[in-house]
Amino acid sequence: MPDTMTFYGQDYGSRILLGTARYESPVLLLEAIETAQPALLTVALRKQIQGGSQAGQSFWSILRSANRPLLPNTAGCNSAKEAVNTALMAREAFETDLIKLEVIGDEANLQPDPFGLLEAAAYLVKRGFKVLPYCTEDLILCRRLLDVGCEVLMPWAAPIGTGQGPRNPKALRELRDRLPDVPLIVDAGLGLPSHACQVMEWGFDGILVNTAVSRAIDPVRMAMAFAGAVQAGRGGFLAGPMPVQEFAVPSTPDIGRPFWDEAHRFMPQEIA
Amino acid sequence: MTIPDVAIVGGGLLGRLLAWRAALGGLRVTLYDANDRQGNEATAWVAGGMVTPQAEAVDAEPELVAMGRRSLSLWPVWLSALPTAVHYSDTGTLLVWQRSDAGEGRRFEAMLRARDTQASYERLDAQQLTAKEPALENRFREALYLPGEAHVDNRQLLPALADALDALGVECHWNRRVEDTERPEARLVIDCRGKSAKSRWKELRGVRGELVRLHAPGIDLKHMVRLLHSRYSIYLISRPGGNLVVGATAIESDDCSPVSVRGALELLSAAYAVLPEISEARILELDCDCRPALPDNRPAIRYSPEARLLEVNGLYRHGFLLSPAIVEEVLTVLPQFLHNPGSTLGASPRWPSLGAREGVFACH
Image 1 (cartoon, rainbow over the protein chains, first blue to last red):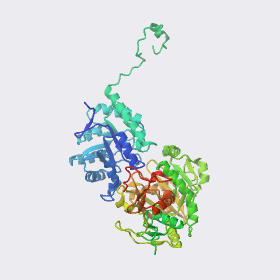
Image 2 (image 1 turned 90 degrees about the vertical axis):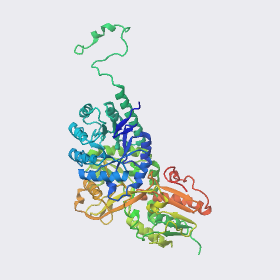
Image 3 (image 1 turned 180 degrees about the vertical axis):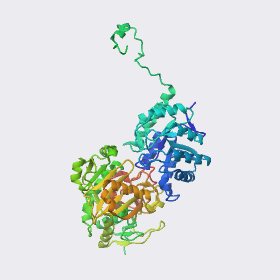
Image 4 (image 1 turned 90 degrees about the horizontal axis):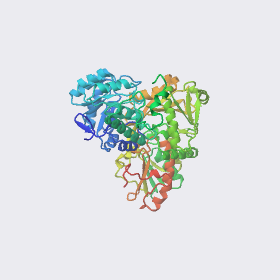
């Protein structure tokens, strides 16, 4: 059976979501897409809306040429109302019910506003949107988002664009344990392939990256590195990691080594 | 009356510069532009006029950096041949960043080294920075200095080029729009209309750029200053008369409507972070225009033998950085098309990537 990521009734063969901002050129972005083979491409439209329905079309038609489903987001929205309005326009512009919902609570670190997020999510789900909320790793917030009808959650690893990797690993892993059946996609703050690999090993369903790829010196190569890391991490999770041991356990028998049965004599007292 | 050798349609920066250099080279040239000789509808009117190949290396491929270097050597020579003086300063660029953005400085260095084999820059500490640019005294702990980079006063240049065309007797048709269906009489037509040529370049898109012009008579920056930041890239340039240009945003949008509140906030707060003294400066203008860009954000030249039409477009944010190098290249290939209109444009001789590129634009 193929290993797919599933939410809102749709199966995705890839576990990467790729952001489309801040590439040096659209051509470079298309190459990164081709390399990473993402499940979805996120696209912002907050800055284009005011300019009329045609303002962003040139860029969006380039994105469409990549033949990947588009996931519009509400990046840059600071209130539930603004996010809802942006979502409504996104549905019209991109002809999709999918919306990556961002309601920013702090301009400096772009941290999600959990209260505005919940309010906007509830409203949008009622109007038929398939909401992917960008949230913190707070368990109660995540539960409330599920309660209002979100089928997938996007907890952060670290603030947007910081590339710090998981800032609060224990809470992220606890969230994974407490919501075992909910698709969880780690969004924001991943900077290195190893960060992606790590969260995939922990059993997260997917990751979203943007600046980690677009702002790399060689974005296409970084896209490939992330794709490999996600695959490796997912493989590690599915394969079932061995239990961690306190002490060295030889993988080959010691019988035959000189003095094998006297090894304990050389062990420091406190360990033995 | 003999027909002109070349009719140039579109008298923005590139069209004017090309018309002037072609006429200087002895060709009979006519120029058509939908607006007036002042040039205040041109994309180049809303610009910093920067010729900063090294500073652009973070956003442009090595060949563009090399073209920028070529332009940097051509600008002072060409400007000195103009009948009207145009302010030009080549004191270089200072790159600064706030403490929390130290990674941006490292990234810039890595990009520059990867893309510009001739890169030459200096690392400055706070003291050296203060010595070089007293206006930034004690504001930044470190900086990079890119010597030799220049800026041209765009708003002096456009009318100065119109004067130069007059002086050479070039027939200029200002306020005369040439429709897509129309072909001015000439042996060869060169289309330099930028974003107005969208109907002929289906891949052409606008990248919205916003900038602010301030009157800040007490502030005289000796260098261009660029603030590296994880989200924005903002520059400050002093202009004659105590003015200061702060630019520029880059938004994927064909919308050229006035500057947004967010754009103004981003520009002004970045400028304020660099120079708190601007708080009492006066806002002269908030300007916006869309730069014409091809999907790889590189310029392109193409030629249609049937139409005897040469087209140049896609200068994106790099009009001042690239125009002289492109004009030089166009003048190199021009004789071939004048003598043998049926020939095709192969790889561009000096800058191969100016020619056809698969998937970036359709060739005729």
